[in-house]
Length: 377
Ligand SMILES: [Zn+2]
Ligand SMILES: [Zn+2]
Picture 1 (tube, rainbow, N blue to C red):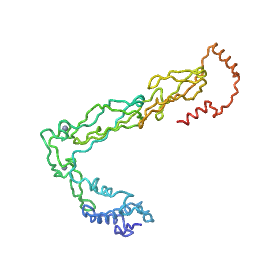
Picture 2: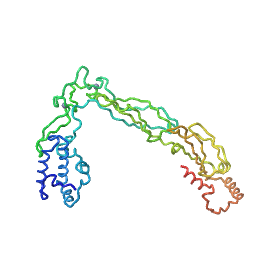
Picture 3: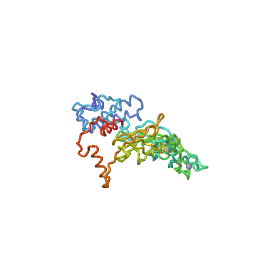
Picture 4: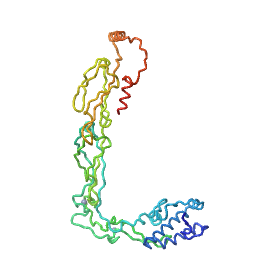
């Protein structure tokens, strides 16, 4: 367990004011801007940690009762409550603790990735397609070629930061005098100021343009598939390298087919007579009309498979199947002649008084078939 009172150099009955004063004293001596070096930094972390615990009434109480919020983390770990730069931010303002990013920055930087949505019909997913996509992105400014300056003019050294890109300032705080540096606002930390911004891009080096791209959509894509087009995203500030463009596919709902993986499911309604007698039924697929062989006695839920007429596999070769689910339609409006015929049929089949037999799900009846169909998915 850490001894925070010892770390701060205060007595166990020290007041909140004593604790604050002790920390102020220690920080004035150990702050990295005053006292650079790993040892001082380590010590500073230690006292900051002690201060974090002892200045917080809640943490102090649990620490006094024997619980250490940082136990195990150690002074170097410092990870539980807040990071080192958080401490610095809290006392000296955001960015003060960040040691990186000193010196002027480049005006150029990589552009952002862009994400656009592309709506497709199922047929495009089955076979792949070429689609035109109009997008609004930033492109390099052709007037200034990304320089951001009006043609014939240039840049001069920023007189706020003298070309450093950073502004150093001495702050008086309750810790005493502290040196902090922050990015220069006048030159966006580049150290250079544009004398006359380009009228086309206002000095950004890029302009927004609408352009049309032709996209090759591979066969097999599905809703959520992302196609990456390297370097087709936003051009960066100062005409920096472009980010990537991601095209996210959304496949529209199809009226006839439901996609499951690369298989396409459809429901075929069959008149009761055709289901009993068997039939050859024309059936439209994305590969043209096919003849569906309906076996005599087909039951509702039974499947007819058309191999290789589904969606092309996105990876690898081959295609999924079309799976047709039979649905036997019971006639509902009967003429008296039809009714007579059906009654005669019922009499012939001894079905005038059905028994209400419960079907055995394993005997190939509709329920068995439905269960198998369910399993196959
Ligand atoms: Zn320009
Ligand atoms: Zn500047």
